[in-house]
Length: 429
Image (cartoon, rainbow, N blue to C red; front, side):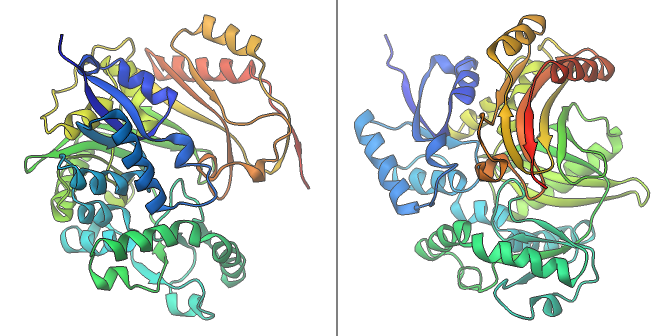
């Protein structure tokens, strides 16, 4: 009997482990946590040396490592190439990962190959007293950390007063991500013009339109796009209401996005990696704009891929980590359309009641395909939620994933689910 190979995951959690164990490749691997999800999110400090030491300890305990991967953003995305290099395993290069994730460096590379498809951008130091004047963009525009996740510390700026209010919040929290990023940049010999930057924020002019995410992979000098997911926002808000798959965009627009994706991925040098790239399609201008590149699969999309294709795109991560070309996805799932909904609150307050087990059991029996994750507990003040469960404008109370035959049926199922989930919040003034 052949012994299973040991596959370490940075950020392993029960939800994704269940998906991994349903893959056809699961017969070959034991999936173990290089780091648990709770060790990379909701923590007070990101210590890169501490995380690397803990990963080494777990590899020694297991006695071997045959592959390493992640489906999470920083620090998971940068830890994988560091560990892979140490143990001589397939992985993208650290430099290519950061050419995607470092927002300023990424824009600099994008500008070389698709200058017509990106906004104006400028790096700035949030601790500089005249930062607003130095940016010199006409509001409204966005300011974001050079490294962040889930839109944390990302703000739309409409005037100097709002800019100064946002900068106070940025100054208090920017080092949570900036210090571990600087450690990586300095420790692993990345270009000095990037590693010695004083600017830790980026300003970008507005881009608008139909937002979507291109999912693909880069392998053996080939860049393949295998799906496009629509990112649908709340009415008149910047926060997402759901990710819907497959995309409703015209095929011609999808082909143009795929071409732009190939050009920028080849420019970054990313190989042996899944990726997802966020785009806007502005129908009025017939223009496509690139928002950001993530050098990993989107774990937020894995369940909806499974509902359509019969297998989650975790298999892309698995294939890349063992140097294998993935097989094409077939439509072998139960549904024609699927969505990952985010049930949000838009004002801070204290949670007085969350859905009961009885409510959830009733809904799962009614909709066996339903996957639901409650992110809050009774007594929690929403301002105290972990950063990965909020952006700068809202709080995700629950993640709800459903499939259907038509979009109308999908939305009807979602509305029925939310009507039977009881959240009571004592909102603040």
